[in-house]
Amino acid sequence: MEVCNDAILGLNLLYSSSTSQQFYNSFVSAVNLIAGTKDTEHCDKDSNGMENIDSNVLKQGEFGIYTLIIEAARYNCSADDLVNLFVKLKFDINLVKKIVDLYCEHVELIRARLSQIGIESSHLTAVMWRLDYRVKNCTVEKIHDLLFFVKLEMEKQNEEIDYIQFVCSIEELQDLSWKLRECARAVERLTRS
Image (cartoon, rainbow, N blue to C red; front, side, top):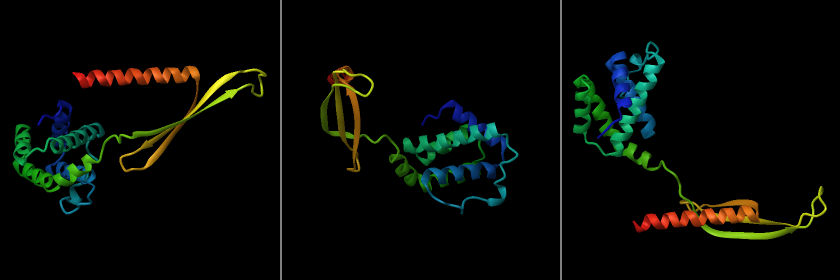
């Protein structure tokens, strides 16, 4: 597992600026937030005081903790991988055991939550359009303009239907059509190679 240098730096800064229990409490809070749990049995309420730590160090440290948890879950790291990482960082072995045990206890919840994050890809299921010819409007007597009313029906992954509607001129519609053809050609080239 590779963790970016900024995350490693943040972990080291927070570890050196706080007590072991404060660091562990930060780790517990991060795991609870990512896993979506309200686990308070691991957290020592009396040692939660992170007020004496510089806010920049705290931010960078929490960035390191969140990055580590997410990357470890993403690559399905074993407990040995995490122990090796923390040993390389020269963390206290008792703290490492507590952190790794907590992570292993929640890893399935974390992975499940992370799998729900992403871009929902909608599928275009229908296109409806109407052509209007404007002869005049309230300010100009003669316009003689074409307007296209386009309605796209999109189906989301949860089978919910969403509509996108817009109005465009013939030039704008030609531009949209050209861009869609260009996109289709690019996808075609990618699938061939």
